[in-house]
Image 1 (tube, helix red, strand yellow):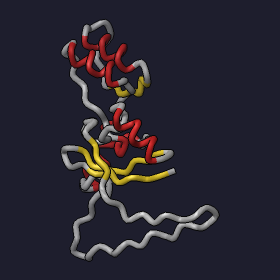
Image 2 (image 1 turned 90 degrees about the horizontal axis):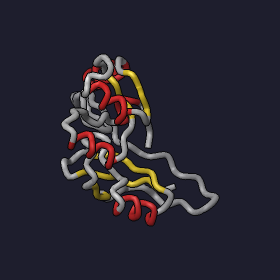
Image 3 (image 1 turned 180 degrees about the horizontal axis):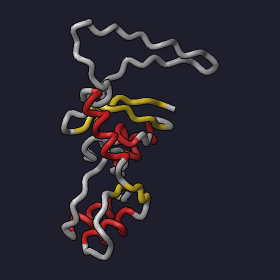
Length: 150
């Protein structure tokens, strides 16, 4: 497993875990590596200070400089104050997770076949584009708000 520091075209920084460098390159060229904040596929690797450890060796514990006492508390992944993250997580908790049925359920709500309600779930890039083409409003939810991991 390899961990890359990544950034999208909008400057959001995040980590990606891949089986190998080739796995990263293949997923990136296929548009599968996407920003968890804004869902864009324009993602690039950043320089990393990770240390390679030979097989059988133990990885050293990461050394982090302590933040200055006057520094504001922020979410390390998104640069968002933890109070705002907590409020956004509460909003997400009040949605119904429809999973892979998201495109179908979003259409039913849009075309008023079922009562309107707040939903979340998954859609492939092609399904998401089809929803946009139909004029159905939705937005990606970053994993930092759902607890999902990649």
